[in-house]
Image (cartoon, rainbow, N blue to C red; front, side, top):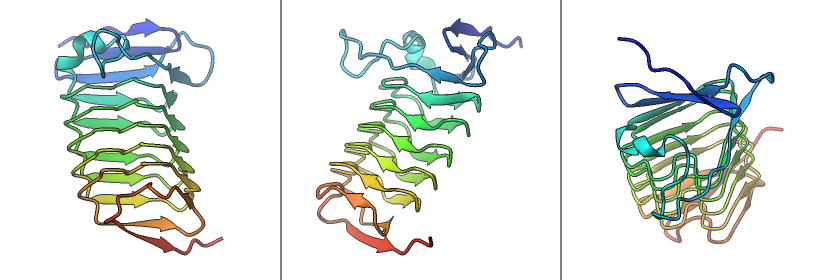
Length: 205
C-alpha cells in the first residue's frame, strides 16, 4: 500500500494514513534543524475546533505522531479531535501550546517527554478520559488550566524541575486523590482540587 503524500505548509509537513495516524514532521525543504507547528485559531463556526489544516479529517484521526524534528506544538493544534486516543510526542518538542489538545475526549494516557519545558494554558483542558499523565523531568511550568476538567485523572507524575503550577492547573480533576510535587515549586492556591492531598518531596541539588 502506497504511503500518503506529505502536505507541505510552512515549516511543517503532515500526512494522514489509512489507519488514522496523523504524522507531523519538519518540512524537508526547511533549512533549519527544527520545524514548529504554528499557533492556530479557534474555528468561529464551531467551538473547540481549530483551523489547523488537518481538521477537515478530524473524524478519521485516531493517533498523532510528532517527529523529533518538531520543536513546538502551537495553540489549538489538535483541539477537539474527539477520536484521538494516542499521542507520541517527539524528543525535540520543548513547548506544548495553549489549548493544543483541548477536548480530546478519547485520550487516556499521556507522556510528556523530558524535552518539554512548558505546558501551556489549557493544553489538555477537558480531556475527559485522561487517567494517567507523566510530566517530563525538565518541565518548569504547568500553566493555568493545563489539565482542567480531566475528570478521571487519577495518576500524575510531576518531575523535579517544575517551578510553577498555575491557577486551576488541575482544577475539577475530581478523581485525583493525591499528588507529589517538588519542594520549592510555586503553586497557585487553587491549582489542585480541595480534596487532593498534595505532598512535597525533597529535590537533590
